[in-house]
Image (cartoon, rainbow, N blue to C red; front, side, top):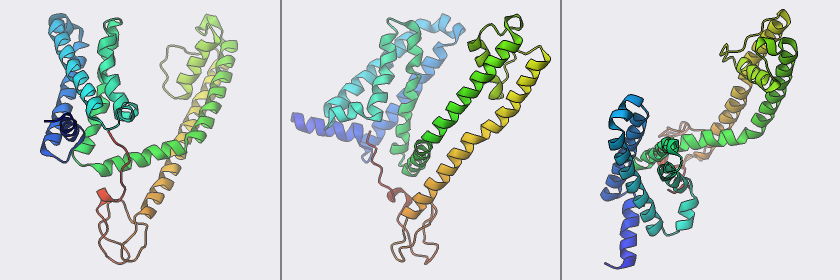
Length: 281
């Protein structure tokens, strides 16, 4: 077997899902990822870690070794190794193995291995659930389209919590727990988001009045980002519907899961084949 043939065969197995070997490899990889996450989560339980810590460490090193070898093989057989390394999955694959090596210097860094959970997203590709990826792309585009409005919104909120934090600091003072403006801003953030931990509570009548205004303002503020994202999502979904055209009457406006044209009854293209995904692993 030549070197070129070996690289091609490895590529078909590791990056492909249309062969039995490729599907088996991806499913085995997902199982290994879930098992490694289980080991990582169990290791964080003090009683379990005290009794089985060494065994769990060995398992973690074994999984990390497997994922490291897999990552190196992906780089080896990929037609464009640099493109893969810079892609979403390439970055996630690298970040999923780094925490264990960093743990040799910073022990607590090993728990950041939970980023491996992102690798399970390959299950959409393995099980041919492309339509779910299309829906997630619609949501992602909606968030990107609303980023400027969200930025303006958060800037406004930042100004408000700073003002209310400074006010409550002047009114309440250190004697009531508001020892600094940053501490008071923290209280304003907790209050305006309606979380209310209760670790800082105004004692004076004027402070309680400011707190009441902050709470009422919080309820109205919460609706703003929801409305922004919902509007962009609705517009993106309408755009997506207009892309689905009937091959017979050329009319659009069909639902994402529609199989037949609602105007003439002709059969539409299969949902999974309407939008070609440009994302490669």
